[in-house]
Structures are given as structure tokens and as C-alpha cells.
Length: 271
Ligand SMILES: NC(=O)c1ccc[n+]([C@@H]2O[C@H](COP(=O)([O-])OP(=O)(O)OC[C@H]3O[C@@H](n4cnc5c(N)ncnc54)[C@H](O)[C@@H]3O)[C@@H](O)[C@H]2O)c1
Image 1 (cartoon, rainbow, N blue to C red):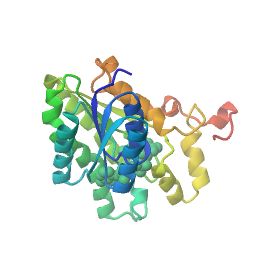
Image 2 (cartoon, rainbow, N blue to C red):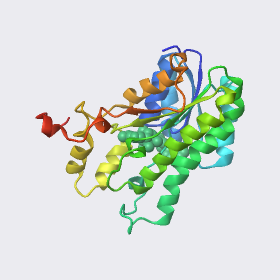
Image 3 (cartoon, rainbow, N blue to C red):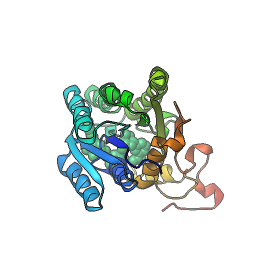
């Protein structure tokens, strides 16, 4: 994967896709600064990497807190010796915040919180990682978009709006940081089996129907795994992706390639 020796900072790396990416990147020889708001989970990910012979450190960071973001980048610079890759992974969905999900039911504070974590967070992280990224000869920022950056879904107005913004931020930063040699890309996953999806399903009026809606559009009839996304992040970070910039990369099992569900193809229930 050609990322051996590269320094990764991954936000929200205590669980799900971030944890998976930290572990896969470390397996390929990258050195990883794991950060999260959940210290128990974050430290456990670091331990799992060390147990497997990899290099990882932990720093608490709420990506909406400017001072904590600044401290995260300083800690990565100090402990890893620099930053090559900023993986803006931390994100939340309104279904995790306990409000109703309809326009009438959702509170302003829920909308603000989703935008703060999903949009302000990546911007703050890019801002404070910049001095180290400028010093790297293989620098890139990799942002977590979503198929909801592109397509509509029910009960996702805050999340989808935030992920649309992340997609556009990717392009704007790619332009602004081009002269610094920093690539900025975004990937858009379909349904990846993590706690975020479990929470979203639990909040749906009919979880089984929602699960079918989410996965029966995948031409590969399953949910994605965190490791599926981790492999893409590692590729986008690697020199093999040196001509990829400002890109929006789907990793959705084919769901946005067509307008249908698997029952049309006689493939029945997903797994
Ligand atoms: N799971 C999916 O199907 C899916 C699909 C598309 C995009 N994504 C995106 O991928 C990213 C990761 O999603 P996931 O499914 O692994 O989620 P997850 O809920 O499993 O994990 C998210 C992690 O982020 C941390 N976190 C939450 N708020 C934070 C904050 N303010 N600062 C720092 N860390 C914080 C959580 O503690 C958790 O460890 C998110 O940006 C999400 O929007 C996920």
C-alpha cells in the first residue's frame, strides 16, 4: 500500500470506520495518532495496534473544540514527528442525539451539533494540521462524506446537509491547498456496519424496512465493513493516488450506480 512510515491523524478513531482505518493503516506500516471523545475506546484501539506490533498514540479530541484540535495536531507533530495524512473521520447523525428526526420535531441544537461535528470539525482540523501538512512531501486530507452528500434519504436533513458541505469543502480546500502540494479528497460510503448505522436503524419507525431500504440498493448484497473503507483511505493517502485530488470517491456497493432494489434482480433479501 506504500504508506509505510507515513504519519496519520484520525479523528473519531475509537470506533467504527475510524478505528478500522487506524488498524489497517498501522498494519501497512503507518504511524497513527488515534483521537476520539471516548477515551476508553480510543486507548483500546491504540492497544490493539501496539499488540499487533504497530505504532500508535492516543490524544483526546472533540473536533468541535478549537483548543483540543490545536492540541491534537501539536501532539501528532511532537509524537509522530509530523503529519502526512489528516483523516477527518469523526461524524455524528441526528439519530444519535435523541431528538425526533422530522423537520417539526428536531431541535435547533441538534441541527447545530450535527453541523458542528461534521462540518466545523473537519475545517478546524484542516486549519490546525496545515503547518505540518505543508512540511510533508506526501500530504493529504481525506474527508468522510457519505452517499447522502449526493442523494436524498429519509430522516437525514441535518446529516445530509452536513455531508453535502463536506463534499464541497473537499473541493474548495483542494483548490486552496494545491500550491502547498496538499491533496484533499473525500469518499462517500454507502451503509457500513457500525454503531452509527445501528443507532439510525433503532430510531427508524420500521427498522427492518429501513435496513432493506439501505442495503437492497447495494449491488453487492451486504452492508459494508469498516475495513472496506479503511482500504480506500489508505489507497487515497498513498503515492499510488498522487494524481487524485479534489475527488469524490463512492464506496457504496454500487448503490448510486442505479435506481432500483435487489428484488428487481431476483436477489431477494440482503445479508
Ligand atoms: N457507517 C456508515 O454507514 C457511514 C456511511 C457514510 C459515512 N459515514 C461517516 O463515517 C464516519 C464514521 O462513521 P462511523 O459509522 O464509524 O461512526 P461511529 O459512530 O461508529 O464512530 C464515530 C466515532 O466518532 C467519535 N465522535 C463523535 N463525536 C465526536 C467529536 N465531536 N469529536 C471527535 N470524535 C467524535 C465517536 O466517539 C466514535 O468513536 C462519520 O463521519 C460518518 O458520517 C458512515
